[in-house]
Structure formats: C-alpha cells, structure tokens
Length: 317
Image 1 (cartoon, rainbow, N blue to C red):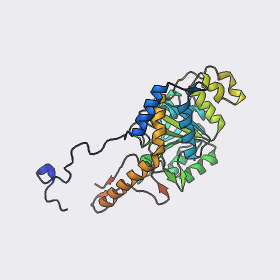
Image 2: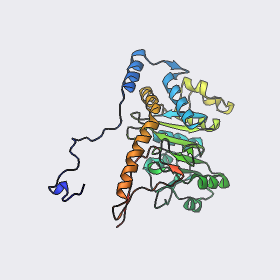
Image 3: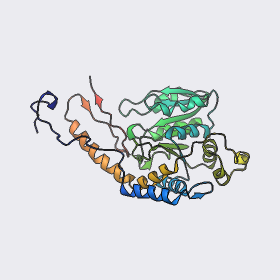
Image 4: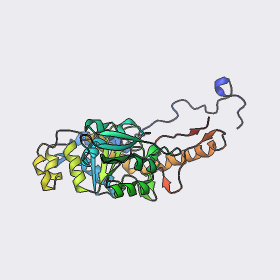
C-alpha cells in the first residue's frame, strides 16, 4: 500500500486496531492453574526449599545440557553470585562490554572489584574479542560478555583467549534465552551462564534469575553466596565448604517460589515463543531492507538469536 500522507499529518492510518496492539508477558491458563494449585496446596518443601524450585532448576539445566542450575531473585543477583563464585574480590579487574545494561558490571563494585570496559563490534554491538586481549593485565580475574539483543558473542575466539590466559568467562544471557552459537546454546561456553527472568524477558517469571554451570566448585560457591538454611545441608558436597553449610555467607538471594511456578510453565513454551517472535522480526527486517539509510539488525549465518530481546537497527546519518 502506497502512503500518500503520514497519519500523523492527517493521512489514512495503516493500523486501526485499538491499543495496546500486544501485551507481554502472556499469561496462559496453565500458569494461572499452576499458581492456584501451589497456593492451595501450600509450600511443599524438600531439603528446606520448595519442590517446584528444584523442578524448575532441573528442567532449566536439562534444557541447556548443564549439570547445575541455581535460581536467584534476579539476574543481577545471579551475576553477583557468579562473580563471587569465580573468585572475584578486592582490587581484581573484570573485563566487561561497554554496550550493555549496567547490571552486567555493577555487582562488581559490591565485591570491590574494578570493571574494565571494552569496546564492542559495530554491527552486533557485542564485546570485541580483539579488544578483550588488549585489556588483559596481571589483575584481570574474569571476563563477562553480554549476548546483546540475543545475538551470541564470538565465543570461539573468546574461549580461546580465556584458555590462553587462564581467565574464566561469565556469559550474561539475559537477552538470549535459547540463542545458539554454531548449534550450541549460549550460557554453556564459559564457566557460568547467567539469565534474567523479569517480565520483559522471553522467559518471564515476574522477577527472578538463574545461573548454570558444569562445575561443582562454582555451583557450591554461588549457592553459599546466595542462600542459607537447610538447602545448604543437602546442596554442599565438597568438604572444604562444610563449615559454611549452616549459615552460608550471609546473603539471601533465593527465588520467590511463585516465580518458580510461573517460570516452569513458561519454560514449556519457550521454544514456541522464540520461534513466533523470530518469524515476526525476520518479516520486519525484510521490510526494512528497502529503506535507504536504515539497516536492520545483523544476524550472522552461524548463530541463532533465540529470544531476540530488543531490536536495534542502525541509522546511517
């Protein structure tokens, strides 16, 4: 349809449906039923925490083929626990992308560590591996990367740098539920993968977060940092951590169990939501290709954006 005059200038509207044109997050009848049943049946505990939390952690770990998953009350809390787990402490430097939400790096200040901001790629907006190497010093303790708007970072190069310098990588996957790099899900390349589950994310649970890892040591350090009480009695297996099992390390970042109920139901439909959003945004991108001065988001041919959180086009001025 050719538009003679923009609607804002008195022309015919292209869309006449009433606002809002869409609503997110979607609340399914299954979620309402699950929450209602949880409220009616009470909080069924196992090892000091609700069974539904354990169920969700298990399912999320299985989705990523990871050994361990640990829920928290936010993605920011998960990042805080992840930084502690890999040993970040007073005076350490952590390389972080300059283009990301501030919470990717701000928890470092709570550990008296120093964020070292790193330049990003001009097309994807992701941290640039070449720039990472330039930032490494004797004080570098970790590298944190953000898979911006669902587009995976160049993980082959980043992991190569990580192994060469013996520096752990933490993946901030808050934008990238279900995203893959060369067929492998993000969050499974580095030592720890971190996900947000607030209501803006594709896997939305009100407000909560989760981290995954394959290493018992890192899981236990994150658990000790983010919880206390009976759960530690069953979750802590390594003898060197036994003395902290009663009290943890003082923080209480555990997830609200109702959020876990919602997240468990949402996880069942995550791939459907991802594919539905992808179809719509791919359609939008095709339409934008013919507009001079505007470039739709780049998606490299060996990655899948998964949740595709955010849609940033380049405007050429």
